[in-house]
Length: 435
Image (tube, rainbow, N blue to C red):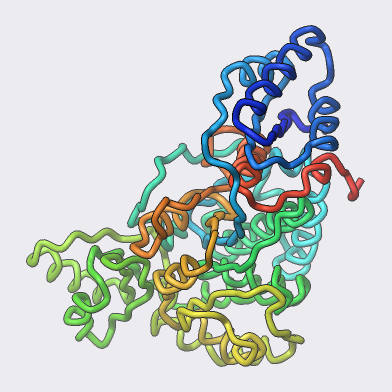
């Protein structure tokens, strides 16, 4: 199926020249409204000189393109050299139908999603495509911002996508395919970070794990989690230091540090209920995540040994692209990347994503790009105290359920990356190498 929206990039040496180029293209398209916008966009991209002043529009047809071009107001700031940092979310903001338009219209995305789906089918006995794309998205759109209850959201309801054994493989498959699509367009990350299962996507893109091995690991990890007794995760508006006095209960663990004043605690239901009463008495805001299991807590300890045994059968390699470690909070070393013990304890240890973002924002010219559904990680990145002055871009690749089409949203982000100065192979957007 043909792409329903097109990215039209324009650049020039000065803002005035860019304005004239936009007017000239708008006048040309107004004279030939029946012109196929895909051909026009491709022609423009092929002759695009890559000047420092840049603007891009995303339109469905020439009529919309003319309207957007006439409204274009060239900015006063030229593009600067930028590097892109991929952020891969965990489960929580996933929804039925995510990536549907990309699967229909983008051969590269479809190729990689099909590959992962076939591998997962061999492990799960279920084709994740039928779960992902059976029917229209069911979840309502939600506002951006830090939603405490969605950090580890893996809710159990009537949807198969809320089962851990399917939710995690689906999220992995979509995020991996999306990363491969971006790579095919010349958008190469300088570094990557993933949240929980998202680190497995980062490791696979970086070459630590092959896709074949990653599919086995993700599928069996998810199935092992289902064997653990139920637990609860509680998001708490306290920093790690102030939270410490509440963790004197041996049945509670620090599951994640997501912000200077935002942590997640987990444990059995009765232990979390005790904590809720203490926090309420002290006036500390908190909210449960809709999970059935307390990921990244001591409740996962029985899974460490079987996971280590499983990963010991894989061939692991040092990261080809730098990856941030949830476990260590800093860069994943070659020693840890190639250690089965690291990947086994990853499920048991605290997710130190706040520290990951501290490292990310040390990279000069960094743009944070959330590669997956939702805006949770982007919200954490945008509000991080070490985000440099000038507010470098924080972008999201997939819209929420019921929002703009996947392709239009992704092309808009690609345009923003290019406008900011990140490397994008514009002509590659019109190559269909997987057909």
